[in-house]
Length: 223
Image 1: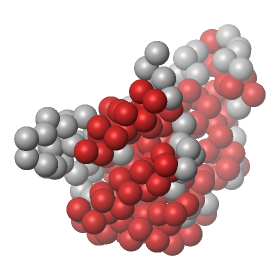
Image 2: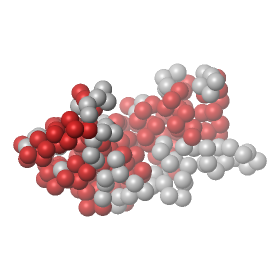
Image 3: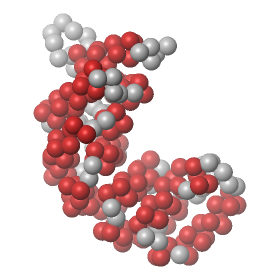
Image 4: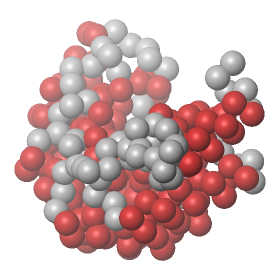
C-alpha cells in the first residue's frame, strides 16, 4: 500500500512482489487481501491480472469480510475492469447478508459499482440499497451523494424509485443551504443530473440541476 500510494516502485519490484503474494495468498486475511487488490488496481506498473489470479481466494474469504473490506474489493475489481458476472453475484449475496451493518460510505460505493457495471443486480438488491439509504439519509455527505448520483439522469434505467431519488435531492439541497458540500462533489452531482427531464412545463432544465449550477456559480467553482 505504501508503494502504491506514493506511486513508487519499478515494474520489476512489483513482479517480485506478485510472486510472493501468490505464494502466500491463502494466508492473507480479508483486510490484507483488500489492501493488496486495491493497491494493485491503482498502480500503473502493476499487472492487473493479479486480481484474476486472486479471485478464487477472494471469493473463499468474502464471508469473513467486513463491509469496508467488501467495498474496497468491489471498487478495485470494478474500477480496474476485472469484474465478471460470477464474482459480482458473490458481492451481491454479501450485500444482502450484511447491508444492515453498512454505513453511508459502504452503501453508496456498492450502489456506484453496480450502476457503473450497467445497473446490474436483482430487484431485491436495490430494495435493500434503498431501505438502507433511506434509513441513513441524514448521514450521507458529499462524497457519498456523489456516488449515489452516478448516472442519475439515466432515468429510464435507474433502479432507484421516485421517493428515494427525491430524498437524495433533498439531502443535497440541505447540505448546499448549510454550506456543507464541497464544490467537487456538487459538480459531479450537477454533471450527472444535466440530462434529467425538466420538472416544470416551459423549462429547459430540471430545478434541482439548475440549483446545483447556481450554487457552483456562486462559489465560483467554474472560474
